[in-house]
Length: 134
Ligand SMILES: [Fe+2]
Image (tube, rainbow, N blue to C red; front, side, top):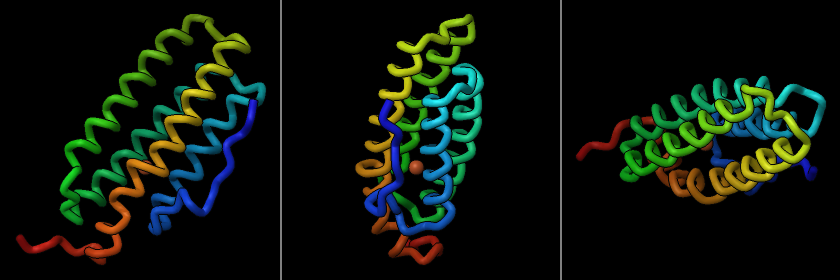
């Protein structure tokens, strides 16, 4: 299993979000160790929730125009993760399951960082944290 490694290209220029993204990478990489699959997925679900709340909160402050799309994208991930958790809670912790889930999460996370989150970077920088006046 190839571990996911943080790259500068993943940075969104916001310390809190970058640190949460690094934490998500660490959680995903735990699937490579001996940790229980369901436990890792529960931790990931909990942390993703915290991260999505922080991210959506910041995007609200800067009036990010694609916020609703971004919320839907987060919601789709949540429901995928809920489904995987439900499947693996009942003892589906096999090497193949771990490899498949790890692969999906690596692809999802890289896409989240390089595509979806990079799209709001100019908005974070532009606002300086202040709400734009319409
Ligand atoms: Fe994010």
